[in-house]
Length: 333
Ligand SMILES: *[C@@H]1O[C@H](CO)[C@@H](O)[C@H](O)[C@H]1NC(C)=O
Ligand SMILES: *[C@@H]1O[C@H](CO)[C@@H](O)[C@H](O)[C@H]1NC(C)=O
Ligand SMILES: *[C@@H]1O[C@H](CO)[C@@H](O)[C@H](O)[C@H]1NC(C)=O
Image 1 (cartoon, rainbow, N blue to C red):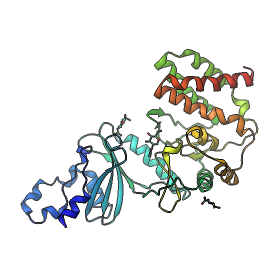
Image 2 (cartoon, rainbow, N blue to C red):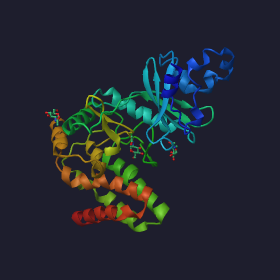
Image 3 (cartoon, rainbow, N blue to C red):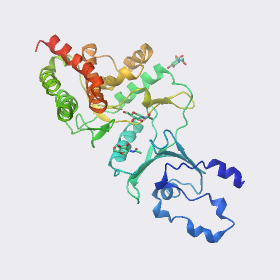
């Protein structure tokens, strides 16, 4: 039995801050060595799982995902499994933002997302988030189910505070500012395009893209003519890496950068998402296509192209610039 238990514990050297005490079984015959077990408060993840998590025993901890890069682990217990992410270099605010986003999506009871349970600081510095563990299925899932459920989420969650979110979050590692704003065109112009344009000027001295981009921002209002724009809850970073499916084949979305925005902005990463015709057909059955959808498509991609430019460098500049140039030509400004 001991051997079997040890087999479960493929401890990763990548999670030193959380290296859990060895399995209980290994201590049951040498009681004195229990002193070596870290006291509960030294390991808040363990403490939560064994109290509010309603487990009496942690039977295994495995590092999953990218190991060292992700610092993600699966905790198996007699009360089910938990998914735990830790970051040793930052405070809890990033994970608090993630938890707020996941919870907002979870509350819509539409598309499946992991339910967040607990966020907090680690005694050694850094922070953690504990959430529901979802067993992923093998396939990418059903595109029309994904479209329909995503639309149901957009439809279910509207905000009375306007466009924005209760906290700022990050898109990739770039800050994403979510200050509540009553007007969508202003919000998208200032906190999305404007923020990225400023960043490009700051980090690359790229005043050309900044100036042209700002000219687009000041003149983009006609692109929204005839559209009814409501603040819908968006995942915010929907690309194939953040889409999966559970064991039943039901779609699951992960790692959000949530905010309330125009639903069409959700497709801003569609160049990396592989959405097909059945996805869009199912989506529009629930959230009908608004007039001018096609002419705003690139505008919503522009935010993410600019973000990629800021994150990964000049390879993405020409995509962003040609979108801007095309709009300036089309709008004759
Ligand atoms: C921790 O957060 C920092 C800042 O956002 C990020 O650069 C780093 O990749 C994160 N590390 C892990 C292991 O998540
Ligand atoms: C996807 O789901 C729809 C119902 O939403 C169903 O009609 C269709 O057959 C499914 N497709 C596949 C490939 O399972
Ligand atoms: C979700 O996307 C972000 C990039 O925006 C990435 O850092 C993260 O690892 C993705 N999540 C998964 C589960 O791959």
